[in-house]
Image (cartoon, rainbow, N blue to C red; front, side):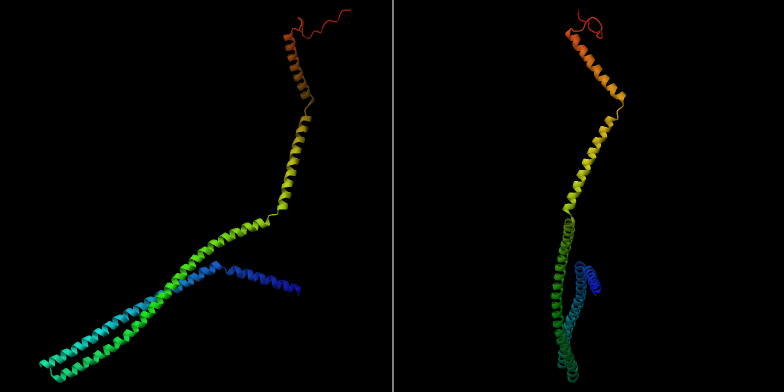
Length: 246
């Protein structure tokens, strides 16, 4: 039972570790900002469509108002012609009545489009506010993401340095230095030993030549000193002195 519990614990820890690697906060933030920008683009497209609809409604409203005025002017013109006898009163009343019906219809359409225009303009205003808010959030999140990236780099570098410092064993370092000192001392002693052996390995001829060269040098110096002091006789310097008288 204990083994299965430990295995389950290990598997759970590895699962959390994998989840942590998958849920990188920087990558998630970047994805969130991309989603916000996509929503912003859709909102801008929707705003453009609503603005276009508002413009069309405003134009329709202006046209309906103009048509109503034209219909009224036509009705007045018909009645005026009836007064001058250009047309009969019956025809003038009938045609003027039709023009007044058209005027009423145009006025109703103008009222309807005026209400729609108010609704569209209100929607445009709200969408513009929402878009400005969304733009501000995107800018804020992008600035925070840049700060987060910089902090992540600093923290990662600091973590590596601290980890390396934490793994440094001062006792092992001192022991390694002591071993190096001991090795250097041994190498120095070994070099000195080789030097002594080299001196001892000289041949007898080398030693004799050395002694003779020193003796010859000393003899020449001694003879020069004796000559300076007038201690040398007329004979050879190698002639022994005469024996004392009996």
